[in-house]
Length: 263
Ligand code: UDP
Ligand code: MN
Image (cartoon, rainbow, N blue to C red; front, side):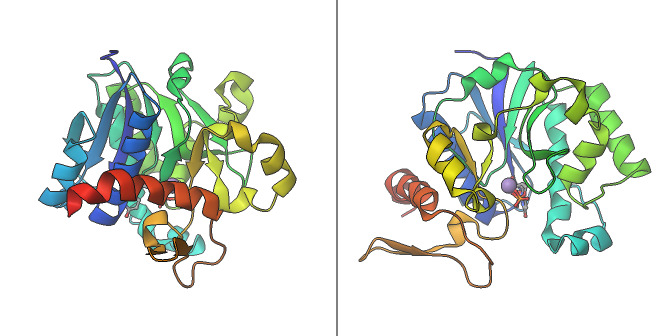
């Protein structure tokens, strides 16, 4: 067992906690040999922490950060994302040499331990603007110096989208041109709502998908599951939902491994 490398995620509340539970279980299911760490803020309830402790090796309490940047977040129509600044605490996990951060709204389908062969800062392109990276999956090395640098960047330059993605893309602004080795293949961060618009590629490469990322407002835990018919319906007013095949996989893990412990 490798002790100085870890997968890291974040939840600042109980709903995202369900995401973290399924993500953690999905990493266990593919047989990872790395530590699992979940960062939580004080808003996460005791019962949720107990559930998380059944799957994660370490529950790390951190202080919430907020970008306080209502204008940019409104432009993105996601006022809740300021809290995602809390993510940068991951650079303070100094007990680890190298980590892979994964958003709580991701699901791992195949073993991704090979990501630890990559260096900081590696990430996959964002489908909305491919010259920047999507901050849902990235390889990083905890470091006080980098942490302070990102905080400094937050204060002096802020975030161009009000969330962690704008901030991290400002700090690691040479990501797209530095070296192709820092570009993770799309199968490590398949942003499912959008790829939906490119069916043929999904047909061609879908078998290789390792991590599905449920970006946007239609999070898997917000879908309604009908046990009698085994059907799922997306939350109302969420625009385009995700490929139901992957939402179903999320729910399969939730129903088989998570919910039995809750009831
Ligand atoms: N997050 C959280 N609480 C929130 C919003 C976000 O803990 O209220 C964390 C969580 O790990 C989430 C990540 O920040 O996966 C990024 O937010 P989100 O996934 O909602 O953004 P998107 O991927 O849709 O752009
Ligand atoms: Mn996400």
